[in-house]
Length: 506
Image (cartoon, rainbow, N blue to C red; front, side):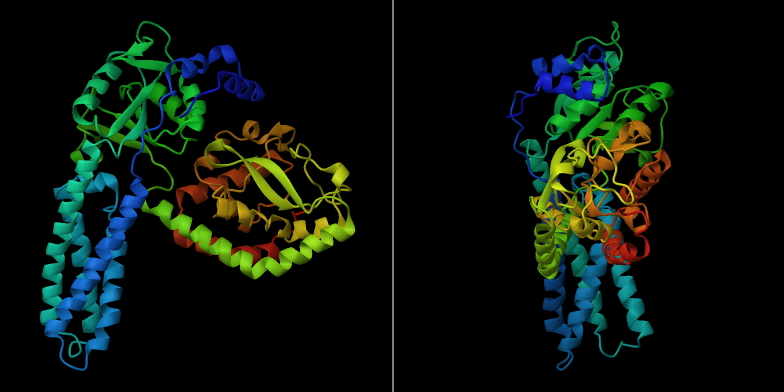
């Protein structure tokens, strides 16, 4: 069960220098929301991941079964790599066509068309490879044609069954998205009515947020409470799970929409602009749908669905391997720290994590015990007397960061992501979020042990606003261009960058 502590919210706003009386939603949170438990729903990432694996296994099994009927004696071994390679390519294309998503599973013709196109393209590549490598004598054309036709039928049958299952879970409320509406008044009331009639089993509506405080935006709309202003939604989304933000504003209100997006793009949620009241119509391809409500996609979660599972596996595997391979280095480092100075081997510091939540990050202690800086209010500089001799070496080589592998195993950090910053870190006497507009957008993904900014040379001291802006810009580039191959590249480049770009690390 989730319960908002209004006093804690007020303190948080005070720390950021914000006027509490301008945030009416702080009291509304406690009065109107989320004293009800979060409903138990199924994970879209797990569903799409399992569906992807089952689909691939079915295609492989089908290919092998058909080859038993049509493959001449003595050529069986050649078919193994061909089947596996073709199914792998099909899997990549099916993902590229965005067919392994809950929203795609709900469609019929659109999903079927993309699935057939991806499977057909895979077979076309296989046919071209057979011609190029002159392997026609080794592969049966009858087998190839039969696998294509039966594979198409299998994919369509599997997707129809999956669609029926998704619809069943949706009807039972197992795939509900926790949703808030930005906007109020008549537009929001019409939107709520349409959600109730067409997406009631898909949407768990929590309430509304609106900056207007006049008669156009009453305190309750269609039975749902107004929880505060748009700025309060940022705080709200950090305190309870929010999956979707539906914006109920006319397209003509360009300034209001832009102001809203400027505030909300820092959150790791899907943001959709409802067009239910707009007279301006686009082609069908321009819309996605929430139930029967046409919406325009304004922002997506940076990493979602199957990619979340893929990144989770990547993090755990790399962290375990790194702990095994680097354990001698960590043991020697711990001994060296104890021999040089009294005090604990590890240093624990509060830092901002995913969605701006507070996490406790582990490091090897690099400073003298009597000079520790828990909040990093003063940056470490070249020749800093607080840093021990061992500390200088481990900071220069980033060995001090190795205990964060335990943070990765706990799920608080990723191997790759924006580096987590200390809460009171400053550049030119400005807190980082004061120095850089949109700073908290880097927290739309889990922070990481290494990142794009680090391998591009932006590590170490951030004493100027320009340096922290460069870090943030590189972090945002990483978030927008994330892929598992990008993560792998950064991991491989990290040791090289530690050697070649360590001049700013003290």
